[in-house]
Length: 101
Image (cartoon, rainbow, N blue to C red; front, side, top):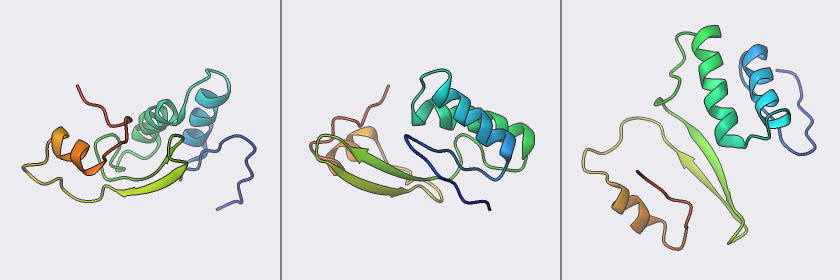
């Protein structure tokens, strides 16, 4: 992979086209990391059809501006059958970013 230098944000994927889609969402559309991730997943579904896409495994770093801390999430594998939004909220006390619909 090529080195990536970033000033205010960056996108890195296995496909240059998917990376450019994510960058455009951030730069030209004023999107955030979640918006860029969704656009990238859509592009990867075309450029790399065997990738897991949305709903597949993931690894994410979450920065909480409230606590000024970074949390790593490894979402590999299946979710437990009895996992609910309430369980997640209880495991993340004080984090107002956990939402559900």
